Length: 476
Image 1 (cartoon, helix red, strand yellow):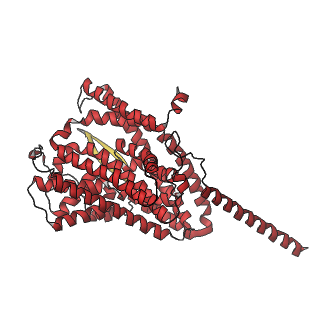
Image 2: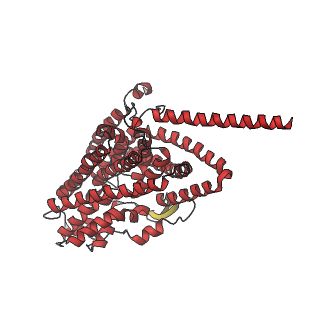
Image 3: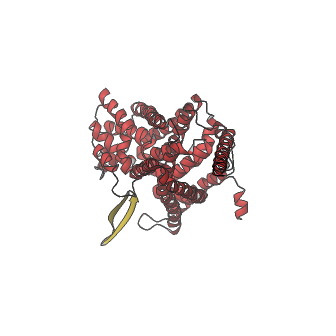
């Protein structure tokens, strides 16, 4: 059974899982139940999906810590490290600006806030807000692992505590440790060797988790259909359509166009980024998808590991064209139209500014709702408008996250291509049955690099032998 399953292409397994998940979701709906007392099938789907996402999130902290430290160690021999970082931030901003302009154009053209069927009584001020001060505070590590604890009332009289990590703080910690290790020099070589070895082990465990993606997809999508159905779209039909049109324009027009302008195949872009996009769609978590996004950037797109290890984790916390550009732009315009507030040129400029720069302000508390509160408060729109949109937020979050992770993989490929460090042969290589370029694939550039390293090592051995012979002759 397992051997037969392995022969089925991974992409086919995932697509089949999408349809199976949707089907089981509707079966669960027919079985009845509600949020307080779900039926057995709904519980099973929820357990499978949440377990898969939990496994992915569990591997993120060690992956960020080890990958960033290893990448900094590799960057010590790269002369253009600062330029790579600057180019990454620049292209994050460029794509975010294009996305927010598309969002504002759709919001002004479709006018989703007028004549919507949503009930104004649903408006309620959100419990959490985005702020610039919160961003500054969030990047300061509270402990070495960036861990935080939250206590909540699970049921009347019963308190529960959950631990979570702050990805942005973890990146700051990893950068500090990596830089310190490089500055220490020779004494830190054993530590860096251990870090690289541990990273390889974590990557192997990650691959085992990725292989569970079809099963996780069934659970996640089935539970989404059961929990939210598709009837919640009704009252906010124009708004939902506007969001998804904007996401589709970014994912299927802007990104492919950028790839083509930089001489990269559009077909290879879609086939290469598909594993991350489909997982982002069903998991609704950029951080949970980050390990797969990084594997896509390195294995399918040919982005050097020392650069991808920095760009992808950083992008997973701040590069969100779906959550931080399309969504807040259209949503802010919806709220303004719903409450009869006329927006001027200055308001649109503020929306663009917050969408391009403000995603960093929600990095410590990543969430599209928090990003929207930051946008509304900056423009001066009623925060109660957030409550109007919560009914369809889970459905929108699927498309937002898929768009996010596609951009998080594409920008490193674009920057690497512009800096002439992209392995183009690997980018154009055929994908295997698992959706990735074969692990043992070695492009000509990689073969040349290996030969050069071998030649240098051989030269060092020859020099060492010559020194020993000279020393022996002098002693005699």
